[in-house]
Image (cartoon, rainbow, N blue to C red; front, side):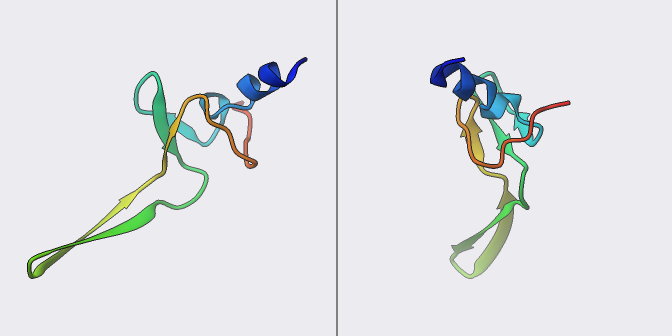
Length: 66
């Protein structure tokens, strides 16, 4: 197996922690969502988001889907 084949098998789209949003992007749910604070005028809004990744991305915490 060459390096390209290994990378494709360990890509986000093959990971148990990845939830697809569309054909090419999705959310990594390996860790808790990240907090984002918006301060507009005198009101403050808090949101949380999971990191968005490309289906072909990869990281060191890959866990194969069962």
